[in-house]
Amino acid sequence: MFCKDKNVFFNNGRSFQDRDGIQIGDNCRIGMNATIATLNHGLTLETRNTTYASPVTIGENVWIGSSATILPGVTLGNNSVIAAGAVVTKDVLANIVVAGVLTKVVKVIHSN
Image 1 (cartoon, helix red, strand yellow):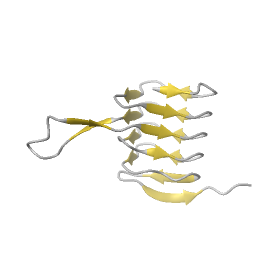
Image 2 (cartoon, helix red, strand yellow):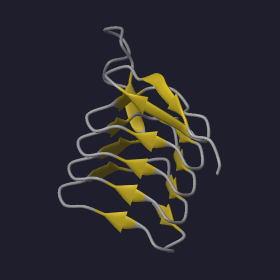
Image 3 (cartoon, helix red, strand yellow):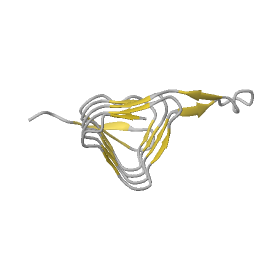
Image 4 (cartoon, one colour):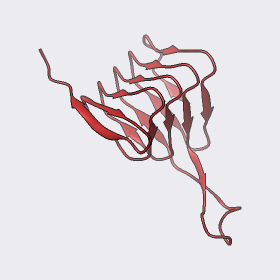
């Protein structure tokens, strides 16, 4: 895991499964019991015991809510917010709030 270490907050109970790298930008908040994983496995019977690693990249000013799960290969854009309990399977663009299991965009963040 690589963290620029500028004002990054990790709450209790968070879990990192880091096999291929987790990069965390400045001013991020990672909520209680959040999980960030870089490792997955195949779905077929032949590949289920084979693991595949993919890095996770977290931009600057990102807030990951409590019990959110970030899956392998995901990039979270700057200023994005991941709601509590969300399961993120795809990249999240900058200035976007996502929520739910198999997240969907719920709001666009506009600059002042």
